[in-house]
Length: 114
Image (cartoon, rainbow, N blue to C red; front, top):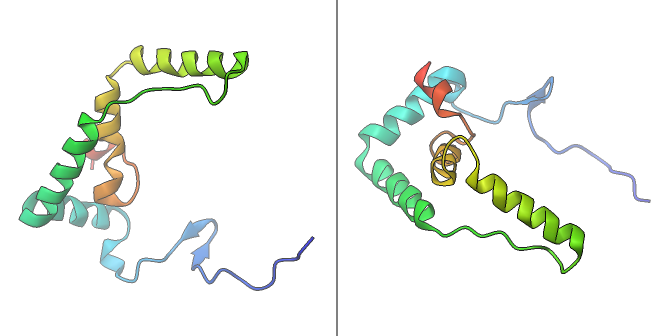
């Protein structure tokens, strides 16, 4: 087995990566800057809106990985989960798409509290 040699070069401390070269884009200040850009810059806002609307219109389906009984049961389970969630699958996808603005997933209820 090959032994890994060297380092990745990623700047991290205690499991947190510090790759952002502009300090004002880190943490809560960064979230506010990204939110302001997405809401006030016409180009950023239009691109984010177009991507979200295209993805929201996509049809989603679940297929079994194989014809085995286990895979068929798993596919049926996932399909049932898509339809019995508290919010709709489209709303869930829309919320997940917050990573387009912020570079990470932030649930809507957390964004409202910032």
